Image 1 (cartoon, rainbow, N blue to C red):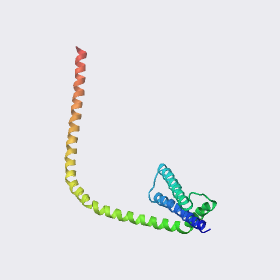
Image 2 (image 1 turned 120 degrees about the vertical axis):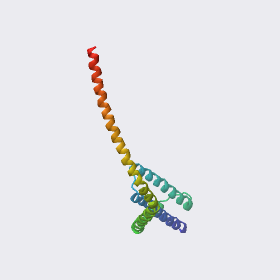
Image 3 (image 1 turned 180 degrees about the vertical axis):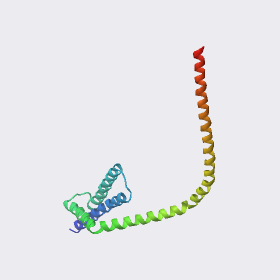
Image 4 (image 1 turned 60 degrees about the horizontal axis):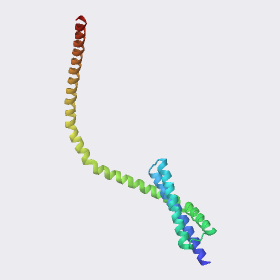
Length: 165
């Protein structure tokens, strides 16, 4: 009888562990948006992990013997966890991720600040060079148009001269 109670308690903890693992996947999905393919792969990974966890619990606690109260214990553990702990853990984890995100953004801004200043310093002569290049390009374009007009004019003259011959 004592052994069966021990096995039942382990199955309750196993059910709680399964829902906790699922909560980890839910936290990841809420914190980082993913597409459907990644979600499907995560679901497959979850079920592989869940099967491994339950196999381990059944194998080490009951020598692999499956009994009805194991399923009841898993279900009871999952319900207890969802009612008592799931919302609290989800809220705390998402807040921690949000705070860590803000901290990393601040650190990133501090780390990239010297590069922003360097970029602004380089931008001053780059704007001057850009003006010169654009001016040269406009002149080149204008010269090209003039040459094109001259060539088309010369082409017409050549055609007319060929017709006369």
